[in-house]
Amino acid sequence: MKKVALSLATVLAAATFAQEASAVPAFARQTGMACNACHTQHFPILSGFGRAFKADGFTMMGSQEKIEGEHLSIPAVLNTGILLKAQYRKTNGAKKVYDKVNAANASVGVAQDLGTTTVTNNEGAWMVPDEFGLFFAGRLADTGTLKVGTMIEHNMDDLVGFRIPVVTDVGAVKLSVIPFLTDALSPFYGYTESSTGLNRAIRWNEHHADISAHRFVGMATGAASGLAFVAKTDMGYINYSRWTDNFPMAQQSLSSNLIHVGLTPNVAGFDMVLTAEFVSGKRKDADGATTFSFVDGYATKSSGFSAQATGDVAGFESSFYATYAVAPKSSASETNGYNTSLTDDKSAMTVGADVSVIPHMLHLAAAYRNGKASGKTDNSVTLAATYDLAQNMALQVTHSARSGTKYNTAQADGTQQTSILLETAW
Picture 1 (spheres, one colour):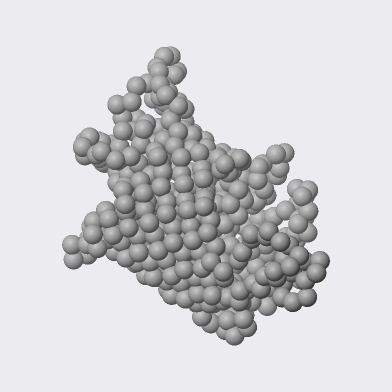
Picture 2: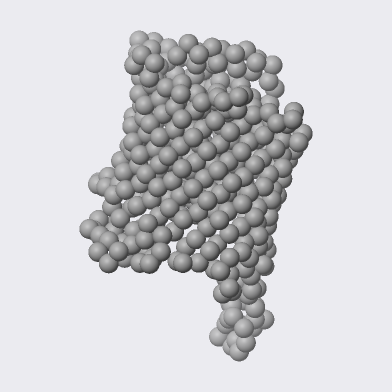
């Protein structure tokens, strides 16, 4: 614990001279620290200090004024922030044919009513905003023995994410109970320190399924609500989560399990996060009904491993990533919600690298995926560049080219995807 305390003090001292706001500005306002205190290379990749701040329940404060009393210690202001993402996406599949007449009189092509504006990615789709989120986050309590924080995320009209970590120190171990819910970020939203894409919001590149095997097989996406029980030390953490794939959670049984183990060593100057994860249990009825009934024979089954290492290579800050995940095939008596195939496992392996060719400004990345689903191979090569206009504003251009036996049959989105993303927060 002394090592963690020393690390916190060191970063606090360095952050005294920081001038720009954090990419999660609610935390920046609370701590008075810049983005690169909690993020390495570029947002949202977590640094060692960022992981320590998360493990401490988002409760650490800087010089911001506090309201304090008996069993009370909260910021004097409600810390908020706004996240905006605008994106252009282009795929090379077959384009729609738009009729110039009303659908009732259409005789060729795909009938469309006059005034229809919806296009597919094959035509080139603008999403402005792609995301527009409002964050309320930071300390709820610090009694000395118990720390409680929160992160609440809203899009323009709905709640999309919610966490309340409750943390206590037992010797050199931090013990946490974290109620959580998310509309799309998987049970790893409860707790993970990995930036490989287990939690899609903490991913090193926007093309999630091309750089994350867990995303490819489905275990790192989707709604999830539940409780995460976490034990954290300087060398790693264990997260056992009991959860359901419903959002929001209202009078639900928590019928699925997540066991997520992470090691966080520093090896030869490289800050590392090595993880293993196992998902099991039951899902809601496969018929797509809005009722939240659970049935025997509809399961959550998947497992995986991930590794990341960040350090200096020939004077350039660099990160290296590897992931593997598998969702076992279904059987006649039990359908796996991650893989309905009765004949083949769904699996993927990815490797990638991200190099800061201009520190804190220009980052070049590449990744390769070897995937298999429904007995067909599904591979991809991804190239990306991220340019930090400011610590809280980034422009990312990513191109993925896909190949394999899956594409022997024409796919709706074709074989290539290009994305241009502008992401900022204030």
